[in-house]
Image (tube, rainbow, N blue to C red):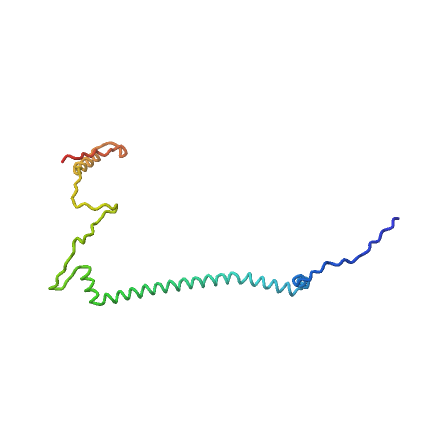
Length: 169
């Protein structure tokens, strides 16, 4: 038989980490109470998180609605002020004099027709004071269109508009 070699056990020292965190981590012992406490904390967070989210959303909605109510109240106050002004006869008289050019008997009203400002078209060119006429015989064109549409046997896609004669009147 072969003899078995005996092994010797030598104790090995781990390097010492004298930091506070390492010492604290080594001192943690997981007991049943610790696991139960951690489980309760996690369960509490999971159960309460949706309720807290709903609470925050409701608070934001209440704030938004409060702002809307304040805006609406300002609008109501403004409209009540306008209504109170319309109940005042002097306000109505001033608007009638300004907008409708009403005057009291014996007063004279002067209207300035041309105050020196010339009216321009949207493209920036001044508006002409001359009356312009068209060179198209529109009555003839209209009658021609009516007779063409009423007396033709062609399908609608093939009907051609009559030519416009211009210049002879």
